[in-house]
Length: 164
Image (cartoon, rainbow, N blue to C red; front, side, top):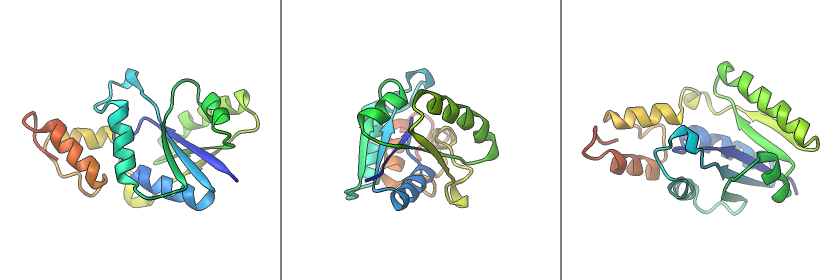
């Protein structure tokens, strides 16, 4: 059985992330979505809220697990007995950073492969950062995030800058 890890901050999870997860499930027997606390990024949602939003956005998939990622990614990969790291690429601008991370991970864990998956072109411009900004300013994010995320964004920004 091939198990893959899809790490990220997922603050919040978008339809681009969901698309990459679906692609991963077509390639691997099991996918673990590993959400990192990412306190340095000053997240809008707590790690528990992000985990709940991912679960609510992907109900009923038995080959999918959602877990908190603490510490070094390659250590988490080993602890989960996975052999693949999935990384999403939206645009060429993502590649340089992702390439450097993949090479460092290979140095730390030579048996672990990193694969890059591109979301459907309809989602290639979506980032969590842009989604949060549009929602904060009262824009409609219904076409770029799952319904549970849209509702959570609306609650977060209610009375403070518009609803999503």
